[in-house]
Every structure is written in C-alpha cells, then in structure tokens.
Image (tube, rainbow, N blue to C red):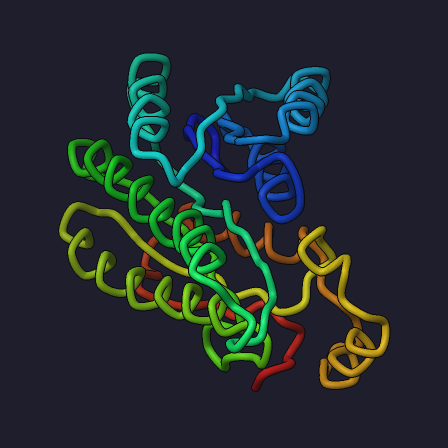
Length: 246
C-alpha cells in the first residue's frame, strides 16, 4: 500500500507511534523513526524492522525544539529527497485538575503537543508543496472533542489540534496534500498505565465494543490515511474509540 513512500512518525519508539511505524514498514514504506529520550526502544524497533528485511532509519529530535526539527528535516531531505507522509504522534499527557495545574505543566504540554506539531508540519509542508503531494496525520484525542475533568490542559491542546488540522487542510489542498486528525479514545499505551482500575472499568462500561483499544487499532487508520485509499479524505477528525463518546 505504501511502496516507495517515505514516512516520518514522531514519537515512534512506543505506543501508537511504534504500531504505526511497524504497520507502515510492513506495507513497504521507508519509515523514519523519530524519538527524543527513548533511544533504546527506538533502536530495538529499527533492528526488528531491519531483521525482517523492512526499510527504516531513526533520528533523535525534540519536536518542541525548532533547531532539532530543522536538523531532522535537513537529514530527511539529504537522505531521501522527499517526504510523503508525516505522522505527528509525539505527545505528552499529564493529568491535573485546573486548580492544581501550573504554568510549567502547561508550557511542557503545549511545547510538545502543539508547538511540535506546528514545527514538523511547517517543515514537512515546505517539502510536500514542491512535490505537490503529501499526507499529514495529526494525533488528537477524544478529550479534545468532549473535554474531561482532570485533563483541562491536555484537552485544550488536543482541541487545538483539530482547529490546526482543518485550517492547514484548507491551505494545502491545492498542492495535493491531505491533512487529517485522529482522535483515539482509551488506548492501551504507557499514557494510561497509571489510570486507577475503577476509572478504567467506568470508561470500559461506556464503550459499545466492550474493550479498550490497541495501538494497532489506531495504526490501521493511519495506514488508510497514508495510502491512496484516503486520497479524497481531508480536513477530517476520525474518532477511534470503539463507540464511546457518540
């Protein structure tokens, strides 16, 4: 499905990013694994792909740093001459009631979740415009659509992803570039490992499909949007939550 495509996944060392990178490589893309602090996990993933004869490379970059992002895209241009798909997956989630939230938490969250997406999208768009082709996929959250108590800062960030996605989709459509967002619900990743058992059960009781999602559930939608199957889908927010918030 992605033969000959170059695909960058930010925050690809674990969770949804890892699943997306693995699935894209299995579908014949050259996957660039971006990581910041999890070098061991990123290396393990790349080794796994290379051992299977799949195509991948890896690069460290803090997406909240413009210097790092600029260097990452310089590397992509020099090594691959093009970028077909950008998956803005890197993100942080630190739950806190509004009264207990501080400016440091706000700045850190917005730095990765929003500034990182903005920087990567801007640099990717510069390459994709010249190609007159590209796919940009941003990870939002159901918290960004409905809000959630204890997630004020995170929800605000993920809601902003939606507005950003739709605006950029309108700007870049004329260049053959699609821009979409995915809003996962409760997905079995490190981000939810500290959720209390009773909270998990309460959420689970509201999911029509009766199970917590997997990173692969989200990766399948990323694959669809990355491929020619998603050619005429742009400016959309696709919810992947097992019918929880409907």
